[in-house]
Length: 256
Image (cartoon, rainbow, N blue to C red; front, side, top):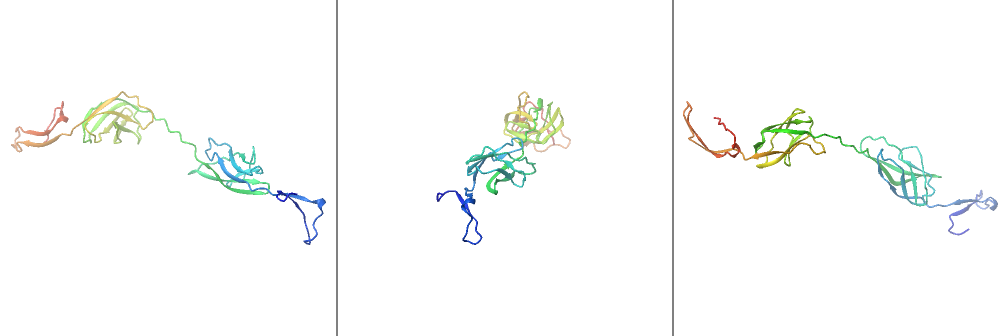
């Protein structure tokens, strides 16, 4: 027997002096403790659940894998000194991702590892939301200060929190859903100018509406009025001075 041999003879004595005869020797083999250093894949869900590969050293004597508190032993296959494969258990998903520790079953006991598999719920496939079709917008212009309302008609408007009117890159979620064919949109504050207008139900697909433009115009402002007083019987003609570009093409009315 070599000095460093992993196999040794086992003898028994009752008095510390006399040992069993050499004809009845029994051999005992010392082996290295299995060292599991890597598991792949380590993340999975119930839809893509498969077998795992465990890499390391001294794994040829592993008989099975155990997972957390699951009592079932999952037989190790394709075992070599450097790797083994095991099937994995199903998991009922409740709450956040579950981390399941891995144990290795040997002939003489169970060995813990620093490895685990991590289960997560299957990916949620987003609901397909069809986008509405806009047929008309009334009016097609409004004050850049916002606050006014416009009427939009078409088809496919859904009553949901994601319903919004888009003025260029600015979205207004202050929308009144009248029906699947009509919504009212509140104008947001916006710089004067023309922007593309659309309505979205919050879906991912591109809308099929024809392109509409909405024009934000400078706010109406009054800087002075002359005369500043008149007869209680009315009839006095007054002049107002200020910025009135927003009223171009519109018959304005004065309110006193």
